[in-house]
Length: 155
Image (cartoon, rainbow, N blue to C red; front, side, top):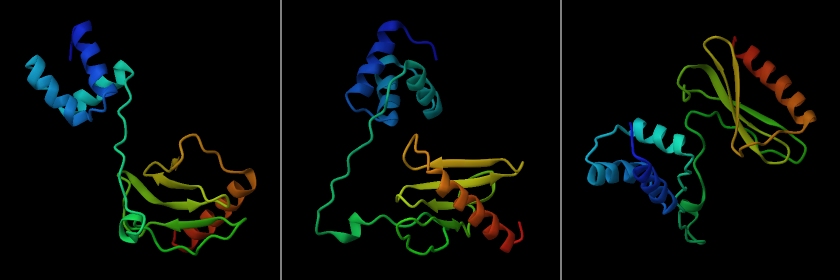
């Protein structure tokens, strides 16, 4: 999608003002008369270096049903972690497209990550906290537990 410098600046401003990608898509249609796909808008925003802001969710402190997040879909229940322990789970349903097997891990410091092996056998690791690197001892424990868990399931 080719936009003029002025149009690109408008898109940057919309995103800075808190517009979602869907909002930007609607604005481009209304203001510029173009009909981009959602993917086109996503790529445009990325190429402009704009950052879409996450919407804040208001939760009443006494409303426990909204305050607790449900577990990841298909994740097998895991034991509660104790300080200094690592807990590994394997998804019972396929939740990551293209993955042969996937699951979650909770490290001793409470940080969590998703892991997977794709159909080519490549390992993927996605921490919930961007840029997080677990302690080396936790990684060793994670590798050992993951290996044992996958062997017990026939992988």
